Image (cartoon, rainbow, N blue to C red; front, side, top):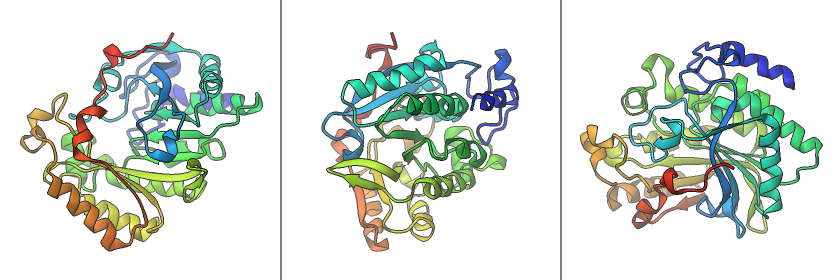
Length: 305
């Protein structure tokens, strides 16, 4: 598995295929270089019920991201790169730290730039006896070839299918239309489903499978009905869906008129009604009043130590 790190010499881990020699210290489009960089880790109780469970999800927030969302709630780490570098061995040790604290799973948040490192770390952790599931918590802008490195290593995939329209993805997340966000996301999510199947929950805690997230945006910018129309046909209406209402105008959201406000109740309810009409059986919903609660400030959280 150590050979997978050679992929960093000409990085094509995500659909941007920027070709940076990260092994030599060059930074990719995402901002990441040759070492893992994380901003925060610890138990988290704000994920979907079967992910958080009673004791929390063992989150590890990775620094940098291959998207440039103008409304990113985590921009301090995803854009600015706040965090500290650690070795793969230290990353593996963190898995055991979180397992020892009683977390139900290891939740890898924004892992895409570090797919190769993560594959090595998970393999080492399993050989050392790690028991709890691994969650791949991603923006869904993934390469299928990179995801195949994780086949058999990831237990739960948690992709956020953000947009149905490549032009919206370009305007809001900086993905050129020629590198189509929705096309890549669809291919990636199908590969995730192939690897782990539908979600399996035991005693209220997720053990294996796929949960597809989607954040409802003001004015229908996300193309929610198109996203779920595709999901119904290609993933099945038994797929677990997390319909997020937590959009909040932060970072540079004010540069787009529609994004300068929170979503309205009727906008969210319209998507809920569509999911019902399509026959989706397993949907997690949020109260709109919870939106500000999901906006983290990483200057005020416990950093990696």
